[in-house]
Amino acid sequence: MAKSKDMTGKKVRFTDQRKASKALAFQIFNAKKAKKEALYPQLLTLVRIVLKQVDKALLQIKTGSATNPKTQRWIKDVEHYQALTLKVVDQTVRRVIDKESVPSSEKIISLFEEHSDVIVKEYRDIQYGHKINLSTEKHELITFLSIEKGNPADSDLFLPVLDTHQKNLKGLPHSVVRDGGYASKANFEVGRALGIQHIVFHKRVGISYLAMGVKKTFKLLRNFRAGIEGNISQLKRTFGAGKATWKGHEGFKAYVWSWVISYSLTRMARMQSGWNRPGAQD
Image 1 (cartoon, helix red, strand yellow):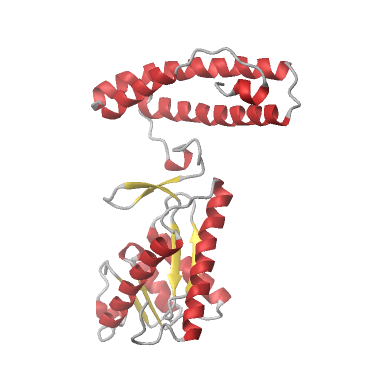
Image 2: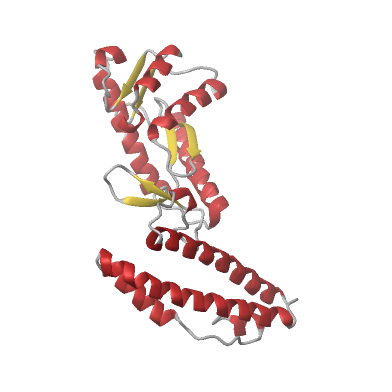
């Protein structure tokens, strides 16, 4: 609303609640649980005042000449953020006032990147964005990548990798090594039934290394997995995989595939030039 004059040529009247809202948000962030819950209704009251002012502002601008492209863009932006703010108000009332558990899939955690998911990694810090599931082969080329929706368990992401390899590459590898989060007896049994001889998980989940078929090759596969961690580090440092900078969900997906393609082309060029031969410097 503060930008209405520049965007539409009309200045809408409103009572600026930004300073009071920032002060309350700061108090909520630093308050203990009991006081925090008492402060939320005050912040929600300010938000509702702003939403009423937004309705009046939209009516004022739409009543006049709203054919100007900049005016249309202002109206579109205001309606977009108005809808998102209503969702945030709803989830706040449900979670804080009504003590309801709001599923992560229903939460809006960012007004500017509303497609973002809540990603919880066991006892580690909560992260925001999208979970990426990928695999590589012995030459360190990426052979599978998916951008997941929500926060699925890693154990649910094991079989889709095998299915995609079987479909696209017309076969499955002789040996597979995955992080401990993918470990489950069901995944192990399905993998062996498909003909994979060595299936190694960083966590055994009740499966002996002898049953995994890696009594003699465990060290080799463990080292291969350590190399995958190095590849992920390189993807972040060299190709920008640590943080997507392109806006929107489509921008996020395009950004991810851009670093996958860049990494793969670079790796293929190094293979052809002999850069990856034993003893070569990376």
